Length: 456
Ligand SMILES: *[C@@H]1O[C@H](CO)[C@@H](O)[C@H](O)[C@H]1NC(C)=O
Image 1 (cartoon, rainbow, N blue to C red):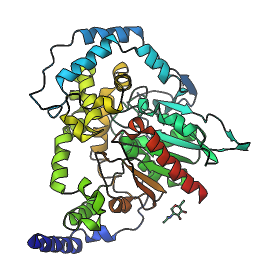
Image 2 (image 1 turned 180 degrees about the vertical axis):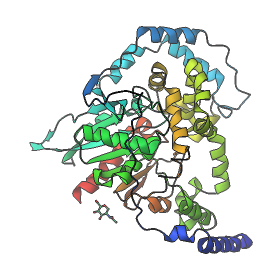
Image 3 (image 1 turned 30 degrees about the vertical axis):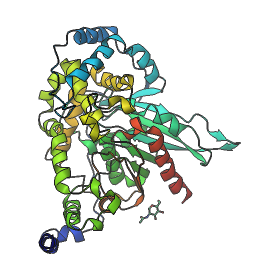
Image 4 (image 1 turned 135 degrees about the vertical axis):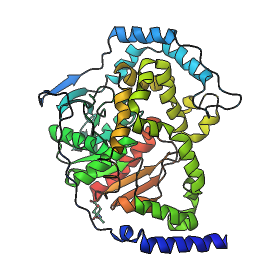
């Protein structure tokens, strides 16, 4: 232990002077990169600034074809004895999902629920972008007119706007102790569901940030708040970094920090945890070996999507069983890592099968799984890799950390990147899909953050 400690000190001191020092000390504000506003659409597509009302309306033949495929699913391989979902989704459980999907799930009813939110499509940088635009339920409270604050709400993979059905009303309904209310704009990421995907390479998370900034401009919102999880957190952090004058506050439920400085502090903290993390949370981050082997165990999908998305996309796009298996496994493990030991993956602990299938339907009905997973490749191609993740944000920022978040970052490390971290809360419950799973908890955290900023 003592030897390890001394080694740690030598490593830390040596590394900081000779190797990481320049990175560590160079904490000055960086120049804001300017991204070209490229056209991502098919050659010859005309710009069109109109805003077209949109309703989800999946043609009957798509649903009939889906039922046909579900009826012809080949035998699923049962899991090995007592392994739960640790080898991937359990074929035995998947069969019950597929039976439900074919026989009980009523898409037309579910579609009606999704269509309760006003939706629109508008063309930005050559792509038709779909979004929910939910206005406040009322703008007057106790005879006083409320201020309306625009909030850009951004999902990730393998999620969709389906994740936001419960949280949107919690944001657009006034609260007694606030003199404002939110107007929510929740877009589908380009290439996800009802938003068109790019036809040429390069549309990574930062470029999506540019598109959504332009969406907010189109809607007349000069300044706005943002909220994001998963890719949505990367995209909204990019907007705060690239266009700080536009963002009033950035609420993230996955704070992402990478680069040499974060790595250095993480290493140093493995010897002296109290330097980077409170003792009660240390087990979420250390021992590093445990977390790294867990990361390797769970991140195979990431590597393949960042390298050969089109190959894996073929099978997922052609087989509803394959698509459901691929997506549901994430909703199990990312909600709670312990669920992988259960026969049913713990799926119904927090979600209904209807909700989970709604999300899968958004990918299935629009043929968009391949274009969605390309985001990993586009964010890690040479021209985008490491370009944005290390940039610092000076916009007031909140990190909401779910106990089962897959990517835990301690506050001290988050502060390396988010220079005005005005709120950092450990949420009492939940996992990676916070908006979907714990809408009340997450919305409370957003309200608290914005109340603090609006009072200041
Ligand atoms: C952080 O943001 C708040 C709210 O805009 C502001 O009052 C404060 O001065 C900022 N702090 C820093 C360190 O920039």
